[in-house]
Length: 276
Image (cartoon, one colour):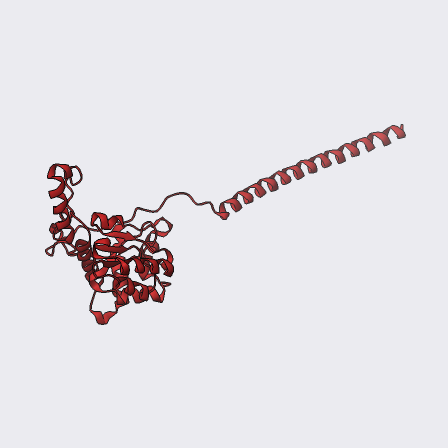
């Protein structure tokens, strides 16, 4: 894996939870030595079975397997398998994602209609879904899941998150390449900057001091073509035709009346001539 060569986490998406693909990945992890696997794997927008998820997490102790859940976990039609995954996944291996523009939270669809789409500002809805799957007995709220997932992200990913495992790897890279060589890559990149100020708890804190989540953009204001409009046009045309017919009828009546008057005058003159 390129990720293992660079000692960075790998992101893998198993489309539609394909068991065959999961089996191949599991075999790779089981048969690989510690130096041949990445330090962690992120299963993006997981949609497989609970059995496959747990088997991957146990496949190689040198590779931590994190599982990404989207707002689809909260859908009324979410599969029982997916909900079981959210229930059984270890708390320190849960990640939350938007999977934008798809996996739109139900609440966003109800509010914005067809103009809604998924983005990172709606990730807390995924947290609510995971919390609901784990049940009230777990004592975890949606905000708790968001905080846990934020901490897991901090542990798994990278160099720019203070206190994460990636910090040591980044320090080694800097030592090998020299600080000047990485300046262009790490210019003012500090995920923690401004986040600790969001709340007393630092990263992942969701409190009164936290900046508001960005809402989705407003729905499109395109005018919808309705059958009613076409019907109204047809009605207007029908009214116009009716008026035209009425006018023609009135004109015909006038012509008929004039003809009758002309006939009466002709008859009077004719009989007058006969009398003479």
